Amino acid sequence: MSDIEKGDIHNGGAGSRLTGAPRPTSIGNPASLGLFSFASTTFILSFYNVQVRGIKDPNVVVGMAMFCGGLAQLLAGMWEFPRGNVFGATAFTSYGAFWLSFGTIFLPGTGIIAAYEGKGDELDSALGIYLFSWFIVTVLLLIASLRKSIAFVALFGFLSITFLLLGAGKLTGKADLTTAGGAFGIITAFIAYYIGLSDLLAAERAAIVGLPLGGFKHD
Image 1 (cartoon, helix red, strand yellow):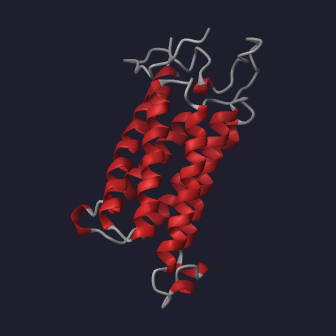
Image 2 (cartoon, rainbow, N blue to C red; image 1 turned 90 degrees about the vertical axis):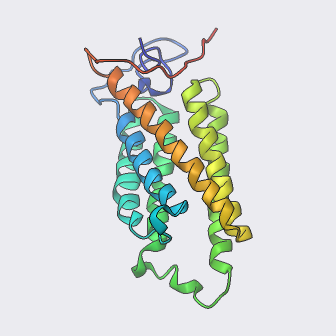
């Protein structure tokens, strides 16, 4: 039996930890949708941050940020609420909002980037503060995940480092920090892919294989 079925984070809140009483719901587990969406968008932007094939401008990721990382994750978060999974709902909705806001920054029609033209490093400083705020959110989610599973601790741990490095890169102007942040982001994306696949396989009655998340035993 997977961590999901045992009542960890991605059981979708099907049972209460305090009472063990099942919560009736006809909503399928949206965790894989949220995780795959998060992983794919993070994977693309992280490759841009390490400048694979000389790519420096992140504009192509805007579409992914708005619809995959943003809208799909937001919907996954909303579906987690009626399942009683407060952690999953908070995480998916938060990062869905992150990707929607990130994509909005780079949409020409918003005028956000244009407002900083001719103002030196002000844009990078503003983005650095923006990224640091998400570092704080991620650390708080990391704390909440410490009794979930090794996979989730790794996910939020690497994501925290990713935001920290990217924010520091913007504030200091050091490209090496941004590159390092991209490298950690790639690792984060693959961890999210792994957890998403684990959840997807656990939902199948006759899955070809099961992927362990390294769940912790609770007294």
